[in-house]
Image (cartoon, rainbow, N blue to C red; front, side, top):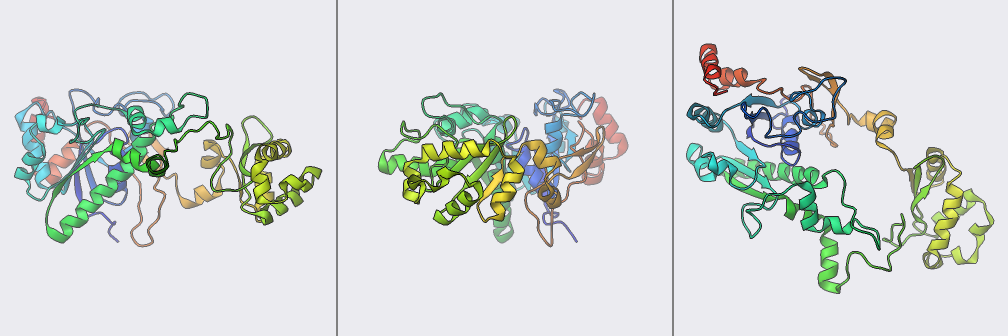
Length: 411
């Protein structure tokens, strides 16, 4: 059976994760993604190409672990777009593509002679999807940005701080992931529109605006109630303050940095938990009702923590869930990847074959389609790995012509 997106071809300039993560979705569901890179700068369009993590002692621009993870099942070619012959080859690829994707700064493709108006002249129904920090319109559109800057400008960084402390940020670039998700949705919507009408279009995406959508309730709370996101009265703890549950938080367990999540939704959950803990304080009047537990939540959390500190997190989670109490061990990445049977059963970490690294596990997709599911078999392309294949099979160039292009530093 044909893959869900096997009829589509994408001429792809995306890099890092905000763009490459989007076209990875397309490739995993069968779209032919032809990744364009620069032979002169040796992969510097995508800094992840030769960056850690690595497999064993391998190093170089073809074996970056993150690059491999974000570019599975794509074809990789190189074009020196400083040369007219390379621009002609790109034109021929665009003529046979449905979508052109990129996440450069504003105006890069225009400088190369491939902005949206030029793309339409090449192929009138082309879909052009651009994804940069601030989009191509608005007062910030000329600024270049990076993941942490996007998170700061959007307001996400501010929300991450505990009361009385500086904003902690979001660690690894959260908006690269989310930006990629929004971008693949935009690609698919534009393809649906094209199938219905025959019309292409330019999809202009701003990752900063995508980030703003993630904390709409906080923005509305300020707009309507003038209530700031971080308030001095908010507890400095691992407690979840909404919705109103008690206990409702993360509690320490046996071992270094081991934790347990517990959420007692109502008095019935609390009574069940108290029946398992079996300590005198569980019968205290101040914990008898939800309203009282919320009022005395600091003391409640302290008592829960004293009990949980002697518990092994997985055993405690099993004990609580068997009694109908929402609970879970806080899992570390290695526990999730190597030990969790549900993750393995879902197929979230498929193994692909890379030309230089051999068999390597990568991130799968967190969804399965019963009729047209995704699959990942091939690792990310080494630099220029599929140049000859694309030029001969797709464009009809002879092997001699391809060799001549190499000698002229076109590819």
